[in-house]
Length: 225
Image (cartoon, rainbow, N blue to C red; front, top):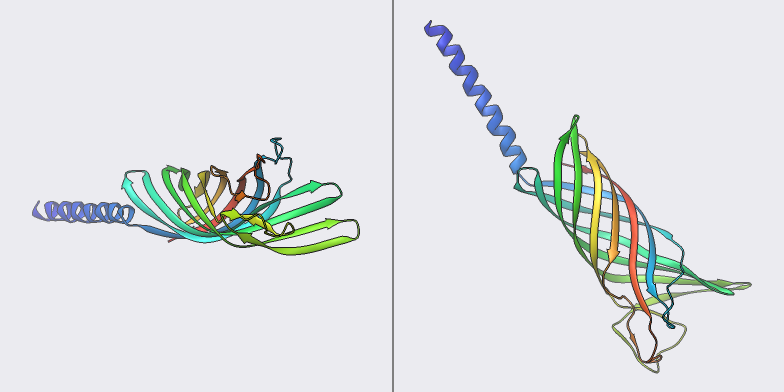
């Protein structure tokens, strides 16, 4: 009888230790690395107030984040990414492709629920990005040239017409859905909508209605540990 009680007590202790360990594991921050492809565009109005009619370009993103538990199944997930955005526009006979490189910080709230042997992921939140470099390529007939993008908040009246200008700061919203395996591998579909104009104040064209915002979606693959 005493031996049975002893074995029951040992079993309860081991079970409790295992459960506490699992809770502790879930309560610890988990780090992740990720990368993937972007499909980006510019949304907004041209100088005449008409809707922009651009084409998607393909870029990429790479970076890391940390998943911090808040309450069961909900996490705060700040991150840091290098991301390429932009668009392709045609103003006959010239086609211009803009690629802007950003250091970006998403600040997402994530819902993570068990599904099969892994977890379903749903997340949303704001992001802030800062432009660090970029290229604009212009092609038309036999003409082809490329120039660096200049990041500035104001274009002065005497600044050259052939340079492409953008504001460095981009702010918007993220939303994503995905799946994470029990081993830490995850895949997610992301969408972004810029909420601030990235075109600078242009004193060369004081009465124009130009308004440009980043928008796009992407696919990410990553590993959480």
